[in-house]
Length: 635
Image (cartoon, rainbow, N blue to C red; front, side, top):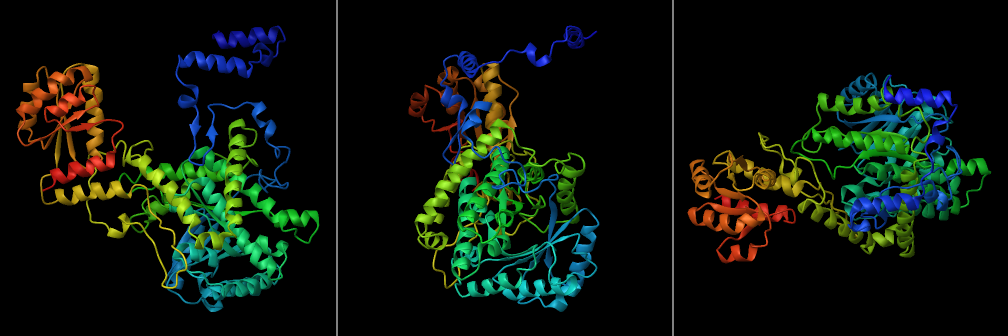
């Protein structure tokens, strides 16, 4: 009998409960054990994570840590909805966005994707000034809106499109129905994108909200939080600024005579999701809680039950582009999958997974299929849709929820103290705050404190760009209107600077010899192997061809092999104490090859006196140093 079965048998024979066999362990005992295992290392520096939001995350949490959290006695469906508004499961709409071109062709594609698991359609209206009811009849032919969520994504404050959709729904399903539909009208969001604010559209939005009041499932106003993430914001900043934008609409429309119970349900939030797995789960739980409190402060004129209904946040989630890459693009599937898991566990109402190749080319039937199936797998195989608030009870996630809610709320209050979203944006507060964070993120990637797989860490050594991509793929994007009153946000991907570096190498290699880096391992076996691997990974990030030598007994043998291979750059890989002898010896035997030492040895000052100037190590600014090596190698 296996030992564990034998133990269970004995426990059962003695009628001992398993939990009683394990005496409780106090926090003090846990801490003492951790301190002992750290062997003198600083606890705070080693195990405590300082988030970019500004709060600390500890290595573990216990039940006692939740004593300060006040909203844990709520159940799903109860105000303030930190645990979500869903009382029966955790289902969400699987959305795919389609660009509207030829109406009949778009309708045909919509019907096709609906047969493949999609339950929500997003129609991106580009280059069309107006959609009429007749247009919608063609676009939505044979689509049963009672079973599908419908969304119009317009590039401008197109009230006419919103009215046309509302009228189409009323005409087909009656003036009072529960058809789920939305239009992302939003002058605040438009100002965020292009710097111009159209105050004249607010009276039109007021009329639209009044007209669509009977349509309980119709959202007329869109708050775009994803744009903050695409500009490099933190999670807390996205939350705070999205809440501030939503509050701006509540403020202006209630001051114009509408009640919050009418306005709040007409606002839909589009949030970005990144790969900070647990933080993203906590974000959705926290932002629902904060929005409910904000709506409550506007004192909707209704019964308690209806007030609760008005305070329910309508959330759509989409992957942020900030962490997506052109090189090693299939890794984007892993990124979007973990992001989808976070959004689902956090309780999103609908979700779009962007195809893995969409950041650099038009999506293909294959990439669209993969994106759809990623959500279908979460439902049909992982059953993420079966349990309301599946994250509930986790000491870690509950504590994160409370911490990030506090951080976002403090920033939200700061925006309100500056007069609200529009005034704060006009003054440049939001832009400055996000820029400070994005600069930190950029530096983290440049120095490899933060990893982008396939970009600044573990690049595919054999991957070369086989076709020239549109230069726009590698640029930061800002769309500033002629009548801008403020500087709009600039969106970009964190990988772009490295992608420009590598694509430059690839373009050069099409007509010339690709820069060749030779690792010269000599000396102690364990150190030379480790540093050769580090150096190969370092230079492959720039698209250089890399080769590790076989390991040499003498410097002369290694230098000869490097010259035989026609190396442009020779990297000595050895131990710190051996560099003092080996490095000057190799340096004197080389001709025009660039000589690099892999490490930051104590003898660095002496080596520099010998003329050795190049050292690479874990504290190097990877981007800046590779740019310098590229300039020297590409002639």
